[in-house]
Amino acid sequence: MSESLLLTRNVFLDTCAYDNQKLRFDHAALKKLKELGKMGSISILVTDTVDGEVRRHIRENLINASSALGRFQSHAGVLAADPPKEIKALFSPIDPSTLIESGLTVWDTFIVEAKVERLSAACVQGSELLEMYFSQRAPFSEKKKSEFPDAISLVSLAQWCQSKATQLYLVGDDPDLEAWCAERPGMYHIKSLKDFLDLYNRAEEKLTELVLAIFEREQKWIVSVIEESFTDCAFIYAENWEAEVENVETISIRIDDVDVIEVDERRFILTLDMKIDFRADVSGPDYDRGLWDSEDKRYASLPSFHTNVVSTESYEVSFEVLYDIENEEATEIRDVLFDDGKEIKVHGEGGWPYK
Image (tube, rainbow, N blue to C red; front, side, top):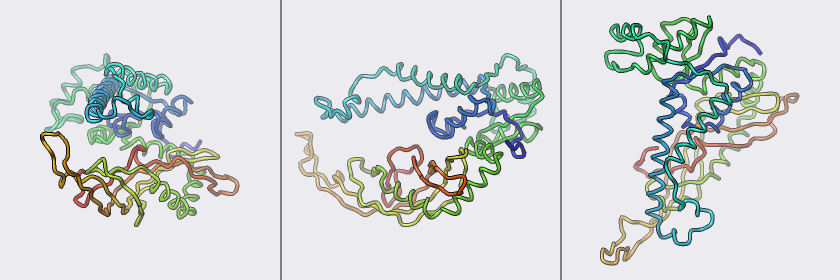
């Protein structure tokens, strides 16, 4: 592997880097990070601070998910007596503690399988933290005075680098990480995990240049496949979840950025930052014009509405391409995902609710 673009194989992800991936350890970026750690291609670090914050975020997310499920069960009571087979499990009681335990197990499994090295805060000296605090050095500042957990995390990383006589990438979009690295040789800031993986893959210069050339040469075909996948997606109308969205038609597609997430001699994964203009027919019950019978607790009349919506949305589109390395051509595109692969929201003319 070429080392010309890769300054070190050591990498630390701040909490925001995991949050930006929505804590989805089965998706392309975090899955690739785990594979690289498992193979020993990179060394991944986690501090006590980040470990604790990730665990807290997992708990909060799953408690919110449990509450959302409870709200669904309450509003969908009409289906509870005899639910269709495909949604029957949604009416089963779920203990939030069971969800939390399962979520934390996913995190623990990631740490083990990716061979993540834990750094303890025990060796961090309070005097160093106080000096940073009173001099308002990153991560402390006039506006952010209570950053002791982050400071403990960063100092432990600096001590690790010093003890190993090595260097480190720090991944996260927190400006304090960038300010910290700017003052310390051998500690390099990268804004996102996607950017780090792109940098890693660009170290394999020949393969990366090849797949980007294939993309440029076959961009028209690739975009046409993405366009077809987009119109085949499940859409929901953000202002009325009971409405049906039909006849989705793209108007224009623009690519703002291309990143290589993974590459080998037979396949590669790209993510594109894309802006898509599209129109769709939306129809459904019009509750604003409906007449509610307060005595019978139902609508006495409920008209329907039909509208044609034109929307412009930005998406992170990821997909896998199989290619023939000898002929330098793509042979198949698969697993096209828009953002996290969920239903795509269509917003009304007013643009509310926001994406």
